[in-house]
Length: 479
Length: 81
Image (tube, rainbow over all chains, first blue to last red; front, side, top):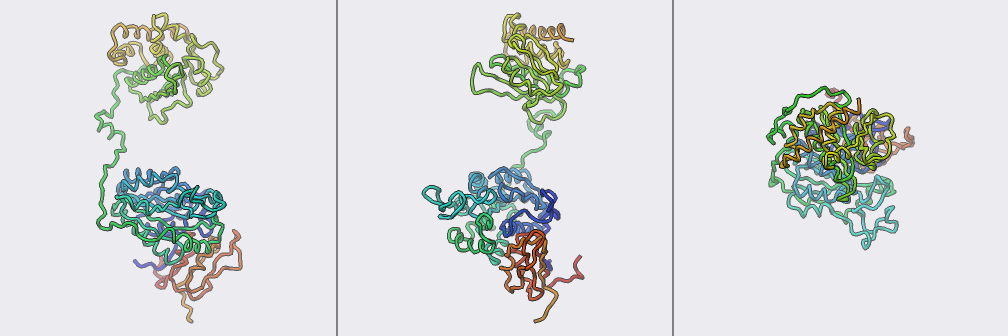
Protein backbone atom coordinates (compact mmCIF):
# COMPACT_ATOMS: atom_id res chain seq x y z
CA UNK A 1 0.00 0.00 0.00
CA UNK A 2 1.35 3.35 -0.97
CA UNK A 3 1.82 5.77 1.89
CA UNK A 4 -0.29 8.88 1.90
CA UNK A 5 1.27 10.35 4.97
CA UNK A 6 4.63 10.35 6.72
CA UNK A 7 4.12 10.23 10.44
CA UNK A 8 5.51 8.73 13.63
CA UNK A 9 6.03 5.06 12.71
CA UNK A 10 4.12 2.38 14.58
CA UNK A 11 7.43 0.78 15.54
CA UNK A 12 7.48 3.36 18.33
CA UNK A 13 5.44 3.16 21.50
CA UNK A 14 2.54 5.65 21.41
CA UNK A 15 3.41 7.19 24.74
CA UNK A 16 6.88 6.63 26.22
CA UNK A 17 5.47 5.46 29.52
CA UNK A 18 8.78 3.96 30.74
CA UNK A 19 10.55 7.30 30.33
CA UNK A 20 11.39 9.14 33.52
CA UNK A 21 10.05 12.66 34.04
CA UNK A 22 6.95 14.37 32.77
CA UNK A 23 7.72 14.48 29.04
CA UNK A 24 6.39 11.17 27.82
CA UNK A 25 5.79 12.39 24.27
CA UNK A 26 9.30 13.15 23.05
CA UNK A 27 12.73 11.55 23.15
CA UNK A 28 15.54 12.35 25.55
CA UNK A 29 17.95 12.97 22.68
CA UNK A 30 19.59 16.38 22.14
CA UNK A 31 18.40 18.55 19.26
CA UNK A 32 19.80 17.23 16.00
CA UNK A 33 20.97 13.87 17.37
CA UNK A 34 21.51 11.15 14.78
CA UNK A 35 20.06 8.49 17.07
CA UNK A 36 16.59 9.92 16.51
CA UNK A 37 16.99 9.70 12.74
CA UNK A 38 18.15 6.09 12.82
CA UNK A 39 15.46 5.20 15.39
CA UNK A 40 12.84 6.54 12.99
CA UNK A 41 14.20 4.52 10.06
CA UNK A 42 14.23 1.31 12.12
CA UNK A 43 10.75 1.91 13.56
CA UNK A 44 9.41 2.65 10.08
CA UNK A 45 10.93 -0.51 8.59
CA UNK A 46 9.54 -2.66 11.41
CA UNK A 47 6.09 -1.19 10.83
CA UNK A 48 6.25 -1.53 7.07
CA UNK A 49 7.36 -5.18 7.24
CA UNK A 50 4.86 -6.02 10.00
CA UNK A 51 7.68 -7.05 12.33
CA UNK A 52 7.11 -4.81 15.36
CA UNK A 53 5.80 -7.69 17.44
CA UNK A 54 8.36 -10.09 16.01
CA UNK A 55 11.39 -8.08 17.07
CA UNK A 56 13.62 -8.10 20.13
CA UNK A 57 15.76 -4.98 20.45
CA UNK A 58 18.86 -4.87 22.61
CA UNK A 59 19.68 -1.42 23.98
CA UNK A 60 23.34 -0.73 24.73
CA UNK A 61 25.03 1.57 27.19
CA UNK A 62 25.45 5.08 25.81
CA UNK A 63 22.89 7.70 24.85
CA UNK A 64 20.74 4.99 23.28
CA UNK A 65 20.63 3.10 26.58
CA UNK A 66 16.98 4.16 26.71
CA UNK A 67 16.07 2.86 23.26
CA UNK A 68 13.61 0.63 25.11
CA UNK A 69 11.63 3.74 26.05
CA UNK A 70 10.73 4.18 22.42
CA UNK A 71 10.56 0.92 20.47
CA UNK A 72 7.36 -1.06 20.74
CA UNK A 73 9.34 -4.29 20.46
CA UNK A 74 10.57 -6.76 23.02
CA UNK A 75 13.48 -5.08 24.77
CA UNK A 76 16.59 -5.92 26.71
CA UNK A 77 19.15 -3.44 27.98
CA UNK A 78 22.60 -5.00 28.05
CA UNK A 79 25.69 -4.24 30.09
CA UNK A 80 28.26 -2.04 28.38
CA UNK A 81 29.46 -3.64 25.15
CA UNK A 82 27.57 -6.89 25.77
CA UNK A 83 24.64 -6.27 23.44
CA UNK A 84 25.89 -8.82 20.85
CA UNK A 85 26.15 -11.48 23.56
CA UNK A 86 22.65 -10.72 24.83
CA UNK A 87 21.43 -10.61 21.22
CA UNK A 88 23.03 -14.01 20.65
CA UNK A 89 21.09 -15.45 23.58
CA UNK A 90 17.84 -13.81 22.48
CA UNK A 91 18.29 -15.05 18.93
CA UNK A 92 19.27 -18.59 19.90
CA UNK A 93 16.32 -18.89 22.28
CA UNK A 94 13.90 -17.27 19.81
CA UNK A 95 15.10 -18.35 16.37
CA UNK A 96 11.93 -17.11 14.72
CA UNK A 97 12.35 -13.52 15.97
CA UNK A 98 14.22 -10.55 14.53
CA UNK A 99 16.93 -9.60 16.99
CA UNK A 100 18.47 -6.14 16.74
CA UNK A 101 21.57 -5.05 18.61
CA UNK A 102 21.68 -1.25 18.63
CA UNK A 103 25.08 0.08 19.67
CA UNK A 104 27.24 3.17 19.65
CA UNK A 105 30.95 3.33 18.93
CA UNK A 106 32.11 3.55 22.54
CA UNK A 107 30.01 0.52 23.37
CA UNK A 108 30.71 -1.57 20.28
CA UNK A 109 34.28 -0.70 19.34
CA UNK A 110 35.82 -0.22 22.81
CA UNK A 111 34.56 -2.27 25.74
CA UNK A 112 32.45 -4.50 23.51
CA UNK A 113 35.11 -5.00 20.83
CA UNK A 114 35.50 -8.69 21.41
CA UNK A 115 31.77 -9.27 21.86
CA UNK A 116 31.01 -7.94 18.40
CA UNK A 117 33.93 -9.82 16.82
CA UNK A 118 32.83 -13.15 18.26
CA UNK A 119 29.15 -12.66 17.45
CA UNK A 120 30.06 -11.69 13.87
CA UNK A 121 32.45 -14.61 13.60
CA UNK A 122 29.73 -17.03 14.69
CA UNK A 123 27.43 -15.54 12.08
CA UNK A 124 24.71 -15.04 14.66
CA UNK A 125 21.33 -14.37 13.17
CA UNK A 126 21.17 -10.78 14.40
CA UNK A 127 21.11 -7.25 12.99
CA UNK A 128 23.64 -4.83 14.41
CA UNK A 129 23.05 -1.11 13.94
CA UNK A 130 26.28 0.62 14.80
CA UNK A 131 26.08 4.37 15.32
CA UNK A 132 29.52 5.88 14.79
CA UNK A 133 29.85 9.50 15.85
CA UNK A 134 33.58 9.39 16.61
CA UNK A 135 33.09 10.21 20.28
CA UNK A 136 31.70 9.08 23.63
CA UNK A 137 28.51 11.14 23.61
CA UNK A 138 26.68 10.27 26.82
CA UNK A 139 29.66 10.75 29.10
CA UNK A 140 30.45 14.16 27.69
CA UNK A 141 32.57 13.92 24.56
CA UNK A 142 35.64 11.81 25.37
CA UNK A 143 37.86 10.12 22.81
CA UNK A 144 36.40 6.89 21.43
CA UNK A 145 38.18 4.19 19.40
CA UNK A 146 36.61 5.83 16.33
CA UNK A 147 37.81 9.38 17.09
CA UNK A 148 39.63 10.87 14.12
CA UNK A 149 43.33 11.60 14.09
CA UNK A 150 43.82 15.12 15.42
CA UNK A 151 40.22 15.36 16.63
CA UNK A 152 39.86 17.42 19.79
CA UNK A 153 37.82 15.78 22.52
CA UNK A 154 37.68 16.35 26.27
CA UNK A 155 40.32 13.65 26.75
CA UNK A 156 42.42 14.66 23.73
CA UNK A 157 42.55 18.44 24.19
CA UNK A 158 45.46 18.70 21.72
CA UNK A 159 43.81 16.34 19.27
CA UNK A 160 44.04 12.56 19.01
CA UNK A 161 47.69 11.65 18.75
CA UNK A 162 48.10 8.32 17.00
CA UNK A 163 51.51 7.78 18.66
CA UNK A 164 49.90 7.62 22.06
CA UNK A 165 46.24 6.91 21.31
CA UNK A 166 46.42 4.63 18.28
CA UNK A 167 44.41 4.96 15.10
CA UNK A 168 40.66 5.18 14.53
CA UNK A 169 39.20 1.68 14.31
CA UNK A 170 37.20 1.02 11.15
CA UNK A 171 34.74 -1.58 12.32
CA UNK A 172 33.13 -2.34 8.96
CA UNK A 173 36.56 -3.05 7.47
CA UNK A 174 37.58 -5.12 10.50
CA UNK A 175 34.43 -7.25 10.44
CA UNK A 176 34.63 -7.71 6.69
CA UNK A 177 37.79 -9.75 7.27
CA UNK A 178 35.65 -12.45 8.89
CA UNK A 179 34.08 -15.27 6.93
CA UNK A 180 30.65 -15.49 8.53
CA UNK A 181 28.96 -12.07 8.17
CA UNK A 182 26.32 -11.85 5.45
CA UNK A 183 25.91 -8.14 4.98
CA UNK A 184 28.12 -5.24 6.03
CA UNK A 185 27.52 -1.70 4.84
CA UNK A 186 28.62 1.72 5.98
CA UNK A 187 26.13 4.52 5.47
CA UNK A 188 25.79 8.09 6.69
CA UNK A 189 23.14 10.45 7.98
CA UNK A 190 24.79 13.67 6.82
CA UNK A 191 22.19 14.76 4.24
CA UNK A 192 18.81 13.80 2.83
CA UNK A 193 20.08 11.57 -0.04
CA UNK A 194 22.35 9.68 2.34
CA UNK A 195 19.56 9.27 4.85
CA UNK A 196 17.60 7.61 2.02
CA UNK A 197 20.54 5.27 1.45
CA UNK A 198 20.67 4.56 5.15
CA UNK A 199 16.97 3.82 5.03
CA UNK A 200 17.60 1.28 2.27
CA UNK A 201 20.41 -0.35 4.24
CA UNK A 202 18.25 -0.57 7.38
CA UNK A 203 15.45 -2.18 5.39
CA UNK A 204 17.78 -4.59 3.65
CA UNK A 205 19.36 -5.73 6.93
CA UNK A 206 15.97 -6.27 8.55
CA UNK A 207 14.67 -8.13 5.48
CA UNK A 208 17.75 -10.36 5.54
CA UNK A 209 17.13 -11.04 9.20
CA UNK A 210 13.56 -12.00 8.43
CA UNK A 211 14.94 -14.54 5.98
CA UNK A 212 17.36 -15.84 8.68
CA UNK A 213 20.34 -14.80 6.62
CA UNK A 214 22.81 -14.55 9.45
CA UNK A 215 24.85 -11.60 10.64
CA UNK A 216 23.86 -8.13 9.38
CA UNK A 217 25.99 -5.10 10.23
CA UNK A 218 25.08 -1.55 9.31
CA UNK A 219 27.54 1.14 10.40
CA UNK A 220 25.87 4.53 10.44
CA UNK A 221 28.05 7.65 10.47
CA UNK A 222 26.25 10.09 12.69
CA UNK A 223 26.61 13.30 14.61
CA UNK A 224 26.92 14.39 18.19
CA UNK A 225 26.21 18.13 18.07
CA UNK A 226 26.43 18.43 21.86
CA UNK A 227 29.64 16.42 22.21
CA UNK A 228 31.24 18.05 19.19
CA UNK A 229 30.08 21.48 20.37
CA UNK A 230 28.64 22.32 16.96
CA UNK A 231 25.19 23.21 15.79
CA UNK A 232 23.29 20.31 14.18
CA UNK A 233 23.54 21.61 10.62
CA UNK A 234 27.29 22.26 10.91
CA UNK A 235 27.83 18.86 12.44
CA UNK A 236 26.27 17.27 9.35
CA UNK A 237 28.84 19.12 7.23
CA UNK A 238 31.58 17.89 9.58
CA UNK A 239 30.54 14.27 8.91
CA UNK A 240 30.80 14.91 5.19
CA UNK A 241 34.10 16.75 5.27
CA UNK A 242 35.99 14.94 8.05
CA UNK A 243 34.47 11.53 8.57
CA UNK A 244 33.73 10.40 5.02
CA UNK A 245 37.37 10.51 3.85
CA UNK A 246 38.39 8.24 6.73
CA UNK A 247 35.29 6.06 6.78
CA UNK A 248 34.40 5.35 3.14
CA UNK A 249 30.75 4.58 2.56
CA UNK A 250 29.69 1.48 0.75
CA UNK A 251 28.93 -2.21 0.89
CA UNK A 252 31.74 -4.22 2.46
CA UNK A 253 30.01 -7.57 2.28
CA UNK A 254 26.84 -8.75 0.62
CA UNK A 255 26.37 -12.47 0.16
CA UNK A 256 22.84 -11.88 -1.12
CA UNK A 257 21.16 -15.15 -2.03
CA UNK A 258 24.37 -17.05 -1.28
CA UNK A 259 23.95 -16.34 2.42
CA UNK A 260 23.93 -19.53 4.41
CA UNK A 261 20.82 -20.11 6.46
CA UNK A 262 22.03 -21.77 9.63
CA UNK A 263 19.75 -23.75 11.87
CA UNK A 264 21.00 -23.98 15.41
CA UNK A 265 19.74 -26.10 18.28
CA UNK A 266 17.25 -24.13 20.35
CA UNK A 267 18.17 -24.09 24.03
CA UNK A 268 15.72 -25.95 26.23
CA UNK A 269 14.25 -23.41 28.65
CA UNK A 270 11.73 -25.59 30.49
CA UNK A 271 13.20 -27.16 33.66
CA UNK A 272 10.96 -30.23 33.36
CA UNK A 273 12.21 -30.82 29.81
CA UNK A 274 15.81 -30.44 31.04
CA UNK A 275 15.20 -33.01 33.78
CA UNK A 276 13.67 -35.38 31.27
CA UNK A 277 16.71 -35.05 29.00
CA UNK A 278 18.92 -35.83 31.97
CA UNK A 279 16.77 -38.81 32.90
CA UNK A 280 15.61 -37.21 36.15
CA UNK A 281 12.01 -37.58 37.19
CA UNK A 282 10.17 -34.29 37.54
CA UNK A 283 8.35 -35.77 40.52
CA UNK A 284 10.11 -35.25 43.85
CA UNK A 285 11.78 -38.48 44.93
CA UNK A 286 10.70 -38.66 48.56
CA UNK A 287 12.21 -41.41 50.64
CA UNK A 288 11.18 -40.27 54.11
CA UNK A 289 7.83 -38.91 55.28
CA UNK A 290 8.16 -35.46 56.79
CA UNK A 291 7.77 -34.75 60.45
CA UNK A 292 5.99 -31.74 61.90
CA UNK A 293 8.33 -28.85 61.06
CA UNK A 294 7.61 -25.48 62.65
CA UNK A 295 6.67 -22.69 60.21
CA UNK A 296 9.92 -20.78 60.84
CA UNK A 297 12.04 -23.70 59.61
CA UNK A 298 10.13 -24.37 56.41
CA UNK A 299 12.05 -21.85 54.34
CA UNK A 300 15.62 -21.90 55.48
CA UNK A 301 18.59 -20.02 54.17
CA UNK A 302 21.55 -21.31 56.15
CA UNK A 303 25.12 -20.09 56.45
CA UNK A 304 27.59 -22.64 57.82
CA UNK A 305 30.96 -21.10 58.67
CA UNK A 306 34.17 -22.00 60.47
CA UNK A 307 37.80 -22.98 60.00
CA UNK A 308 38.83 -25.02 57.01
CA UNK A 309 38.95 -28.61 58.26
CA UNK A 310 35.98 -28.31 60.66
CA UNK A 311 33.70 -30.14 58.28
CA UNK A 312 31.96 -26.97 57.11
CA UNK A 313 31.39 -28.20 53.57
CA UNK A 314 30.42 -31.69 54.74
CA UNK A 315 27.87 -30.17 57.12
CA UNK A 316 26.38 -28.11 54.30
CA UNK A 317 26.30 -31.02 51.86
CA UNK A 318 24.77 -33.31 54.46
CA UNK A 319 22.05 -30.77 55.35
CA UNK A 320 21.14 -30.44 51.67
CA UNK A 321 21.41 -34.17 50.91
CA UNK A 322 19.26 -35.27 53.84
CA UNK A 323 16.64 -32.55 53.22
CA UNK A 324 16.45 -33.75 49.62
CA UNK A 325 15.31 -37.16 50.84
CA UNK A 326 12.35 -35.47 52.54
CA UNK A 327 11.38 -33.90 49.22
CA UNK A 328 12.63 -30.34 49.82
CA UNK A 329 14.22 -28.18 47.16
CA UNK A 330 17.81 -27.59 48.21
CA UNK A 331 20.96 -25.79 47.14
CA UNK A 332 24.52 -25.89 48.44
CA UNK A 333 27.03 -23.21 47.55
CA UNK A 334 30.57 -23.42 48.91
CA UNK A 335 32.77 -20.37 49.40
CA UNK A 336 36.48 -20.90 49.88
CA UNK A 337 39.04 -18.35 50.83
CA UNK A 338 42.24 -18.22 48.81
CA UNK A 339 44.18 -19.95 51.59
CA UNK A 340 44.22 -23.76 51.64
CA UNK A 341 44.36 -24.30 55.41
CA UNK A 342 43.57 -22.39 58.54
CA UNK A 343 41.49 -19.81 56.75
CA UNK A 344 37.78 -19.48 57.11
CA UNK A 345 35.44 -21.53 55.01
CA UNK A 346 31.73 -21.14 54.64
CA UNK A 347 28.88 -22.42 52.60
CA UNK A 348 25.29 -21.47 51.94
CA UNK A 349 22.45 -23.98 52.05
CA UNK A 350 18.84 -23.35 51.07
CA UNK A 351 16.10 -25.74 52.13
CA UNK A 352 12.51 -24.97 51.18
CA UNK A 353 9.50 -26.07 49.19
CA UNK A 354 9.40 -23.20 46.72
CA UNK A 355 11.86 -22.39 43.97
CA UNK A 356 15.22 -21.24 45.22
CA UNK A 357 16.43 -17.90 43.86
CA UNK A 358 19.86 -16.70 44.96
CA UNK A 359 21.90 -19.60 46.28
CA UNK A 360 24.04 -17.44 48.55
CA UNK A 361 22.65 -16.92 52.06
CA UNK A 362 23.31 -13.18 52.17
CA UNK A 363 20.78 -12.70 54.96
CA UNK A 364 20.61 -16.18 56.45
CA UNK A 365 17.66 -17.30 58.52
CA UNK A 366 20.06 -19.67 60.28
CA UNK A 367 23.74 -19.28 61.08
CA UNK A 368 25.87 -22.19 62.19
CA UNK A 369 29.08 -20.60 63.46
CA UNK A 370 31.85 -23.04 64.23
CA UNK A 371 34.51 -20.52 65.28
CA UNK A 372 34.76 -17.00 66.62
CA UNK A 373 35.65 -15.17 63.40
CA UNK A 374 32.58 -16.70 61.76
CA UNK A 375 30.32 -15.54 64.56
CA UNK A 376 31.82 -12.05 64.40
CA UNK A 377 31.56 -11.90 60.63
CA UNK A 378 28.07 -13.29 60.04
CA UNK A 379 26.04 -12.62 63.19
CA UNK A 380 24.88 -9.18 62.03
CA UNK A 381 23.59 -10.59 58.76
CA UNK A 382 21.14 -13.04 60.35
CA UNK A 383 17.50 -12.18 59.65
CA UNK A 384 15.61 -10.87 62.70
CA UNK A 385 13.79 -13.82 64.25
CA UNK A 386 16.38 -16.19 62.79
CA UNK A 387 18.40 -18.87 64.51
CA UNK A 388 22.02 -18.91 65.62
CA UNK A 389 23.77 -22.14 66.50
CA UNK A 390 27.33 -21.63 67.73
CA UNK A 391 30.18 -23.82 68.78
CA UNK A 392 30.65 -22.92 72.43
CA UNK A 393 33.77 -25.08 72.73
CA UNK A 394 35.76 -22.71 70.59
CA UNK A 395 33.82 -19.46 70.81
CA UNK A 396 34.61 -17.57 73.99
CA UNK A 397 32.39 -14.57 73.37
CA UNK A 398 28.66 -14.14 73.72
CA UNK A 399 26.52 -13.37 70.71
CA UNK A 400 25.28 -9.76 70.70
CA UNK A 401 21.93 -10.15 68.99
CA UNK A 402 18.82 -10.25 71.17
CA UNK A 403 16.33 -10.62 68.30
CA UNK A 404 17.36 -14.12 67.28
CA UNK A 405 17.13 -17.56 68.88
CA UNK A 406 20.50 -18.74 70.15
CA UNK A 407 21.73 -22.29 70.72
CA UNK A 408 25.18 -22.57 72.33
CA UNK A 409 26.38 -26.12 71.73
CA UNK A 410 29.89 -27.45 72.52
CA UNK A 411 30.14 -29.08 69.11
CA UNK A 412 33.88 -29.66 69.08
CA UNK A 413 33.73 -30.91 72.68
CA UNK A 414 30.98 -33.44 71.96
CA UNK A 415 32.94 -34.76 68.95
CA UNK A 416 36.13 -34.91 71.01
CA UNK A 417 34.39 -36.95 73.73
CA UNK A 418 33.40 -39.44 71.04
CA UNK A 419 37.10 -39.78 70.25
CA UNK A 420 37.44 -37.86 66.98
CA UNK A 421 36.86 -34.15 66.34
CA UNK A 422 36.38 -34.97 62.66
CA UNK A 423 32.78 -35.99 63.38
CA UNK A 424 31.80 -32.40 64.25
CA UNK A 425 29.75 -32.21 61.06
CA UNK A 426 27.48 -35.04 62.19
CA UNK A 427 27.10 -33.48 65.64
CA UNK A 428 25.87 -30.46 63.69
CA UNK A 429 23.36 -32.54 61.79
CA UNK A 430 22.06 -34.12 64.99
CA UNK A 431 21.70 -30.72 66.63
CA UNK A 432 19.97 -29.33 63.54
CA UNK A 433 17.55 -32.27 63.54
CA UNK A 434 16.67 -31.65 67.17
CA UNK A 435 16.18 -27.89 66.72
CA UNK A 436 14.12 -27.98 63.55
CA UNK A 437 12.38 -31.39 63.81
CA UNK A 438 13.10 -31.62 60.10
CA UNK A 439 15.16 -34.84 60.20
CA UNK A 440 14.65 -37.98 62.26
CA UNK A 441 17.87 -39.40 63.71
CA UNK A 442 17.16 -42.89 62.34
CA UNK A 443 16.63 -41.47 58.85
CA UNK A 444 19.97 -39.64 58.97
CA UNK A 445 21.73 -42.78 60.19
CA UNK A 446 20.11 -44.79 57.41
CA UNK A 447 21.55 -42.28 54.94
CA UNK A 448 25.11 -42.34 56.30
CA UNK A 449 26.36 -45.06 53.89
CA UNK A 450 25.13 -42.85 51.02
CA UNK A 451 26.68 -39.68 52.49
CA UNK A 452 30.03 -41.35 53.20
CA UNK A 453 30.39 -43.72 50.30
CA UNK A 454 33.22 -46.22 50.66
CA UNK A 455 33.85 -45.53 54.35
CA UNK A 456 34.39 -48.42 56.76
CA UNK A 457 31.59 -49.52 59.04
CA UNK A 458 33.52 -48.30 62.10
CA UNK A 459 33.57 -44.76 60.69
CA UNK A 460 29.87 -44.92 59.88
CA UNK A 461 29.13 -46.12 63.41
CA UNK A 462 31.14 -43.27 64.88
CA UNK A 463 29.24 -40.78 62.72
CA UNK A 464 25.95 -42.34 63.81
CA UNK A 465 27.00 -41.82 67.44
CA UNK A 466 27.80 -38.19 66.63
CA UNK A 467 24.36 -37.59 65.13
CA UNK A 468 22.75 -39.09 68.23
CA UNK A 469 25.01 -37.08 70.56
CA UNK A 470 24.23 -33.77 68.83
CA UNK A 471 20.53 -34.56 68.89
CA UNK A 472 20.59 -35.59 72.56
CA UNK A 473 22.51 -32.48 73.63
CA UNK A 474 19.86 -30.18 72.20
CA UNK A 475 16.95 -32.23 73.58
CA UNK A 476 18.59 -32.34 77.03
CA UNK A 477 19.62 -28.70 77.27
CA UNK A 478 16.99 -26.70 75.38
CA UNK A 479 13.29 -26.78 75.50
CA UNK B 1 1.76 29.32 -8.21
CA UNK B 2 -1.19 27.26 -7.09
CA UNK B 3 -1.72 26.54 -3.45
CA UNK B 4 -2.91 22.93 -3.21
CA UNK B 5 -3.82 21.62 0.21
CA UNK B 6 -1.59 18.58 -0.27
CA UNK B 7 1.29 17.84 -0.15
CA UNK B 8 1.94 19.69 3.03
CA UNK B 9 4.40 19.54 5.93
CA UNK B 10 3.22 20.07 9.48
CA UNK B 11 5.53 20.77 12.39
CA UNK B 12 4.46 20.11 15.96
CA UNK B 13 5.83 23.27 17.52
CA UNK B 14 5.97 21.82 21.03
CA UNK B 15 7.84 18.66 20.08
CA UNK B 16 10.27 20.46 17.75
CA UNK B 17 13.70 20.99 19.34
CA UNK B 18 14.74 23.63 16.83
CA UNK B 19 17.74 21.71 15.48
CA UNK B 20 17.21 23.11 11.99
CA UNK B 21 17.91 19.87 10.11
CA UNK B 22 14.54 19.91 8.35
CA UNK B 23 15.08 23.49 7.24
CA UNK B 24 18.49 22.59 5.79
CA UNK B 25 17.08 19.50 4.08
CA UNK B 26 14.08 21.14 2.43
CA UNK B 27 14.77 21.49 -1.31
CA UNK B 28 11.94 23.99 -1.74
CA UNK B 29 13.01 26.20 1.17
CA UNK B 30 9.49 26.23 2.52
CA UNK B 31 10.45 25.48 6.12
CA UNK B 32 11.76 28.34 8.23
CA UNK B 33 12.81 28.96 11.79
CA UNK B 34 10.00 30.63 13.68
CA UNK B 35 10.80 33.88 15.46
CA UNK B 36 8.57 32.50 18.24
CA UNK B 37 9.79 30.23 21.05
CA UNK B 38 8.04 27.10 22.24
CA UNK B 39 7.64 26.25 25.92
CA UNK B 40 11.07 24.61 25.98
CA UNK B 41 12.68 27.76 24.60
CA UNK B 42 13.36 26.49 21.09
CA UNK B 43 12.80 28.43 17.89
CA UNK B 44 10.72 25.73 16.26
CA UNK B 45 10.49 25.11 12.52
CA UNK B 46 7.46 26.30 10.58
CA UNK B 47 5.99 25.52 7.19
CA UNK B 48 5.51 28.73 5.24
CA UNK B 49 2.13 27.49 4.00
CA UNK B 50 2.82 26.70 0.37
CA UNK B 51 5.35 25.17 -1.97
CA UNK B 52 5.77 21.75 -0.33
CA UNK B 53 6.35 19.00 -2.89
CA UNK B 54 5.96 16.14 -0.42
CA UNK B 55 9.51 14.81 -0.81
CA UNK B 56 9.64 13.77 2.84
CA UNK B 57 13.16 15.07 3.43
CA UNK B 58 12.05 17.01 6.50
CA UNK B 59 10.40 13.92 7.96
CA UNK B 60 13.44 11.69 7.48
CA UNK B 61 15.95 14.32 8.61
CA UNK B 62 14.00 15.09 11.77
CA UNK B 63 15.36 13.12 14.73
CA UNK B 64 12.17 13.47 16.73
CA UNK B 65 9.63 10.72 15.98
CA UNK B 66 6.59 12.92 16.26
CA UNK B 67 7.70 16.49 15.50
CA UNK B 68 6.98 16.53 11.76
CA UNK B 69 4.33 14.89 9.69
CA UNK B 70 3.95 15.15 5.96
CA UNK B 71 0.70 14.80 4.04
CA UNK B 72 1.74 13.37 0.70
CA UNK B 73 0.33 14.30 -2.68
CA UNK B 74 -2.07 11.34 -2.69
CA UNK B 75 -3.40 12.10 0.78
CA UNK B 76 -7.14 11.96 0.96
CA UNK B 77 -8.76 12.91 4.27
CA UNK B 78 -11.87 10.94 3.26
CA UNK B 79 -9.86 7.71 3.10
CA UNK B 80 -7.99 8.23 6.33
CA UNK B 81 -9.30 6.35 9.29
